[in-house]
Length: 216
Image 1 (tube, rainbow, N blue to C red):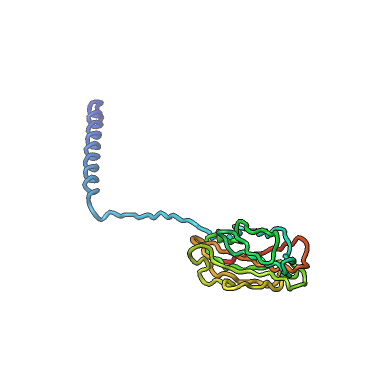
Image 2 (cartoon, helix red, strand yellow):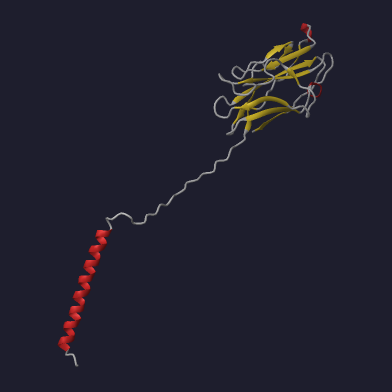
């Protein structure tokens, strides 16, 4: 049977109406379904990370002591000159039997833990008294003393060589363990006092190095 153009147009229009009606019903059903429970859910996790490395830094805040130039007061009956300093605040050098050496300097040796972990501190000297000072009218002497710096204890697990002067023995061999767990945030400095006995026959310009090592 042949379909007229008019009939064909009505069929097309009817199809479009049915399609639109079906779409409206489908959208309405989906809207109702969105309020129902039982839908699948998904959780995702974000992660923030940071890597912080520790630092082992031991430094001399005050790294040199200069006793200056002078001589032994032999006219006063002395056979040696004795000098020492172990004060970081006044910088006073105590002297006996000495002439023209310095009376004050900035400070005694001061070590600081400038890192981020506790440090065990050892000392080594490049010379002992005989090598450093020399002379023989009386035995020369090179001594040291360790001490906390500040109002609190900087060496949390023990400060050694702090009650009396200690003679430096064999150079470049003996390691002196002076501090266990030097603090790194408060009270993180310590002092190293030095004492020398210079015989009357010692001469020349003298120098030595003190090597401080910090291990975490």
